[in-house]
Length: 287
Image 1: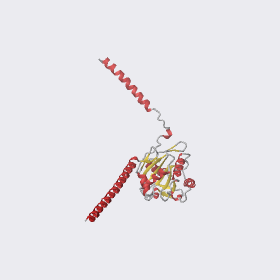
Image 2: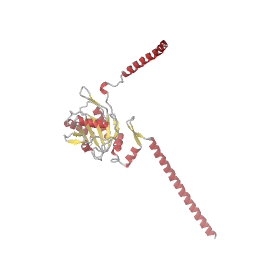
Image 3: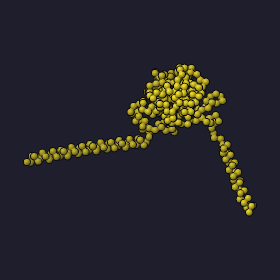
C-alpha cells in the first residue's frame, strides 16, 4: 500500500518541481525595459488639483507661486522637463510652440504656457535664455507675458510632478529620464488633459485649450466643434465622435422633415381657403 502511494506521489512531486522551476524562470525573464528607464511613466491624475502653493523662481528672478498663474480666467499649457536636456525636452517644447503657431490665441491673453524645471541646479538665468530662444522662434509679439520658465527646489518641482503623475529619474551621468508629455490645466488649477509625444497638431492644441478653459475662451462655434469631438489617446488627438455626429444628423433630418411638412400644410390650407372662396363667389353669382 505504501509503495503504491509513493509511486502515485512521485509524479506529482516531479510536476511540482517543474512548475517551481518554470515560475522561477518566468520571474527572471527580461521584460525588455532598460534598467535606467524602469519607473519612468505617466500616471494620469485627471481632474486632480495642482499644488498651487508650490513656490518657484521665474525667468526674471522673481519669487512666484503656481497660484499666481491660476486666477480662474485662463487655461495653462504645462510642460515638465529641464533646460539643459540634450534632446527630449527640446523636442516637446519645439512641438508645442510649432503647434501654437497655428492658433490665433495669444499666450497671456487666452492661455498661459508654463515650463517647470525638474533640475534643482538650474538657474533663472538659464531659464531666461531658454525662454528668449523660444520667443524668438515663436515670433508672436506680446507672447512674453504669457510664457513662463520656472526653476526651484527639488521638493517643489517634485510636488508638481507627483500631482500630475510625471515619474522621472536622474541617471548616473546627471541627465534625467522622463516621458514626453504636455499637461493641460484648467483656470482653477485642475488637470484637464494629457497630450503625449513631441508633435502636436494646432487643431488638437486648440481643442485641448478650449476644453481646459471651461468656456472661458473661444466662440460658440468652437465649443460646438469640440462637442463633436473626443480625445483619442491612441490617435494622440481629437477625433470625431460618431454618435454625436449621428445625433446631429438625425436632428437635422427631423428639422428638414418638419419644415417640409409645415410648407406642405401651409400650401394645403391656402388651397382649401382658395377653394372655399371660389365656392362662395360661385354661390353668390348663381343667386
